[in-house]
Image 1 (tube, rainbow, N blue to C red):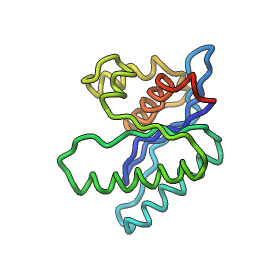
Image 2: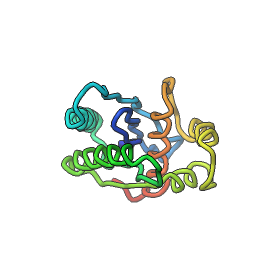
Image 3: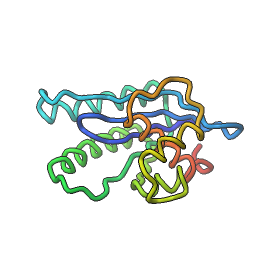
Image 4: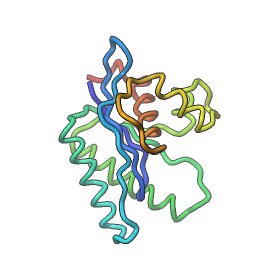
Length: 161
């Protein structure tokens, strides 16, 4: 069983596809940090995000989409853009009949580390111990997407088919 997990943004989007194995560590099948150009109009950036997520869903055929929920932020401009990117991603997932799961940063931290106020560094150090990663992770956004996917598998893994 595979899931796609996403750390949403509109400039950088962390994407991971994880397979639940039930016999050993879960397996990271794909991860990337997809980037959009600030030179493009915002609607074009959203279109590019949707197209990329759609392409990955078609290629890997996951059963669910796990995405980070927005939490508190002081930057209203950023939060609006990320909200619109999240909407685009959730639409694409729903349009492809995926189950949609959303997790807040504290939920992700609890699932990965056992502590809801864990530092980003702590999460990053524990993730590779929980999943079989065969390639070098190039960005924090990728690692965040993997953590979101691990959260989904920890919370929903035995009910997904």
